[in-house]
Image (cartoon, rainbow, N blue to C red; front, side, top):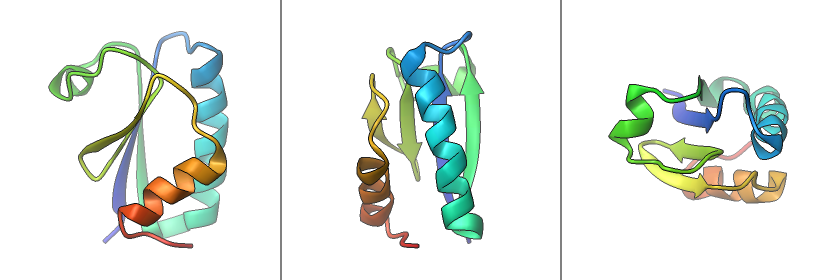
Length: 87
């Protein structure tokens, strides 16, 4: 079963959000069916459920892992590894 990764950006996305969207596309290709990515743009119910007040943000398997900045590829891969997923 793939690990759920939720990505939140503003609408329109800020520079960090644009970088994160590009980064997550590469991560999706690298991890293939090991992760399931859902991208949310702008204010939505899910954003409020997590009580996220800054973007961009990344939630992995229900845990807020990154908020307010676009992570490096290595940081995002480390967060995935900590959640139990490796390439």
